[in-house]
Image (cartoon, rainbow, N blue to C red; front, side, top):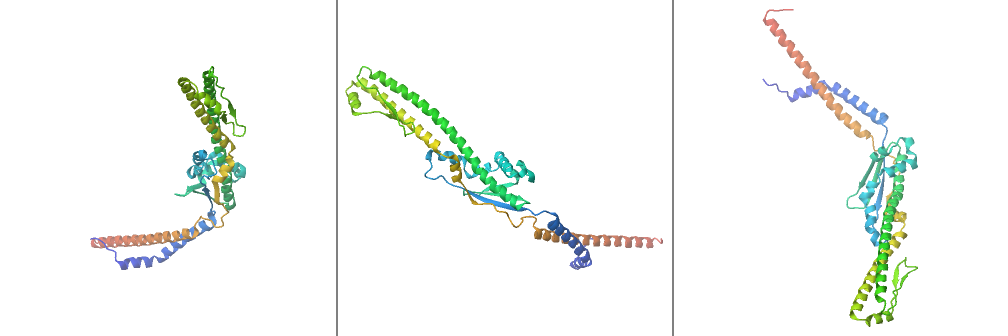
Length: 328
């Protein structure tokens, strides 16, 4: 036969084991309170928010793509955990004495890029509220200098590239002028003169005047076509050279640190938090209360089950012995 437990039996069992339930719950609350209030050290969290600014109109347009590549929110967030940057922060703030290592600090940092914005948040937890705020602000300061170095390295590569291109175009330009001067021999045309602007950053300026143009028009068609072709080639090469020269001078005049500083703007600096984020004392006590009640109820029901099972077995054994005429 299946045994059924009535509601009355459940209530009676709970009432009978109320002191056990109360005692276990009280012990759980006491342990949780001691651990939360006296054993576990409080943990604080400091936070800062940074905005990555868009390129300003005053900045050279040809550098936009390079700067955006170096200082986009996602790339900047990754750079904040760079071992080079973290090592600089540890050394400058003397964090070795506090037990911080490069790996530990990188793992402790919580860096997030807010969706569809240019905002980057930096969070750090620790037992010393003043220290974690100082660490975050130091990371932001060093990240600006480190980003400037990265931008400066990129600009340096561009300068080298433009310089090579300028030399190549100048070589081609010299060859084209030499070719013109050879063709003009015997035609009575003056040689092409190439000037360098003193203020224009080394750009080339071709001397042209009405007399040269008139003399070109008086040549025979074949000679005129050849000279016009070379003249067109010289003009194109001059424009290419001057274009690279303009970019070279603009890139050379850029301050990578000023550019990085303009791109990285701290909106909210980290301050020492006053209230710990862990342990959550009230929550821990509430959880301990629920767990204590559950454990107490379990013990009460197990005690009742054990007692009833043992009593039933002894009664059945006595009946069997009495039926067989046995006595003890």
